[in-house]
Length: 423
Image 1 (cartoon, rainbow, N blue to C red):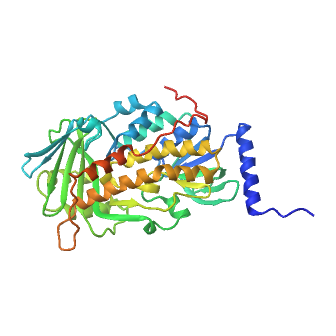
Image 2 (cartoon, rainbow, N blue to C red):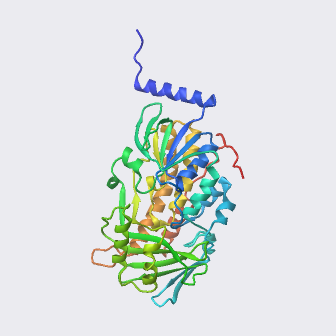
Image 3 (cartoon, helix red, strand yellow):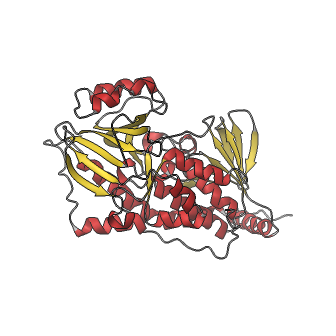
């Protein structure tokens, strides 16, 4: 009579078998959902570590433009290890700094891109989200399978893999699946539960879109803040000097507009920004003819775990720190490096790899989320129930910023495969 195998025995045998397969040279098949920044960055490192990578993106093509994003501290080190420093810097906005201005355009305060060694309010690596996405896609497109205009419709995992049904009808099996599909991650909702369980609204709404540069903008970002209403308008330069990127912030205790209903979002923005001074009316005049409008709540994703079995999360899908932190892209780039490295170092065992990834990243993520919450609080409207605005002059804040920029170790992963980048 054959002995009945316990669950522990079964898992141990599977782990041994998986390790033997990897040693024999079979490559793990990894599906990544999302082709913005976190997804292609992860694809870069997974490919170098020996995985066969597929990236699925529901949009029909890469989305251009978008918010300017920054890389500071340890994130710049990751870009260097990717071999992409020159390509990224060539696509940067080349912003010299930022001026805060009053309603008449008079300068109140100035921040320069070389402040704090290039890791200040305006980072020396500042690039439009769409431009960074393009750099990462160009780097990986030859060695990674990209599927645009499709998404994961269903998945079921077992001890050996994950069966995936795509909305387009294809059915495939992967060893691992990673969701890098943003704040409103469909994969997170599918595997971990509804969005409201993890989203933390910080009380603000953010919108941005490109406009003709009819404002004489030249390498300097301009921001106007209306202290009474808590609203602000911002114009920033981009590489195309004939255009500029416009941004609006407003305090918002509620947010009931579908994040995919663009017409409703534009109506909301017009309502929220009515009567705002400075250049706001001229910026709003281009709302209907812009090609790349975006509006959403300023929110964070807070989760106890970023993995479940063979499914993991990365970037905003796992730990959005909100635009108020200025570090969402840094978290995505660093997280991609660590996740791929830990999975490869664990012989592609998901339990070990995902656990080590979370252990390395958790404190780094929490420091950046704390900065996001503090910056959001600094823009809250005064009132009897409002928390006092934070005092950013203390040593405690300097220490927090240090942890948020450089507070994670980047292992060399010397014992795992690494195919040299092709540049």
